Image: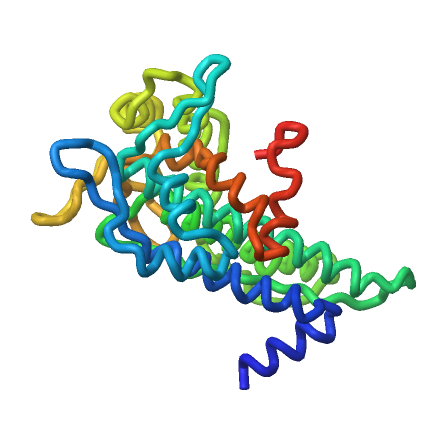
Length: 304
């Protein structure tokens, strides 16, 4: 029933059959990316596929040759000086590349769909009503929390602050202006401290961006800068106190939903999110026309 409703909605919005198939296939491919596994070759740091079954499914959905896709992931061609050379990748490097690619596919497809839907709904007539869509991801507190959890939790902090401000602060100010008698509600949740710690200049994101610009920067140098800047100076930033047997943590943030321990391993590589150009070139020649269209202009005018 849900599937039928989705197809009907997409039809009403003007997507043709080929575009619908493209959307479904790219969405499926993005989900399958999470099941790809790579292993280290014996006596080498070089990564190689740990089975081809998942890669074959992804390649089919994307309209690629599976062997070409795996070769491009494990042995991408990179520019060194004026020459293009083949460079073997480690398992973490390949995993980061896979994550960056599937995020890129989803982002491009999502933006394309938003543009198409806006075009279809644009009547060129004066509007009096609108529908607002709010999609809130759940707050995440796991045993092991990384950059992905910080981004999700930061988004929730911002949404909660927005909700609080409009539903409590502004609403009660309006009551006061209109002389309405009511009992003041002190919701006691000013989330500015945690939000500013993450997004302000010299906050976590700012320091992460800064570290990514230095060739010799490392997880350790990033952690040290965070501690130097915030430990003992910002209430929302704490030294982690993990339970016995829990994964290593490098700092803790006091969020509105609870204190979360974060591990910063690999954050610099994740933040750079470099797209594997060898794979992108395959996308540009894919038999999946939607994928081909989404990446047709990649690389032009400095697009990333």
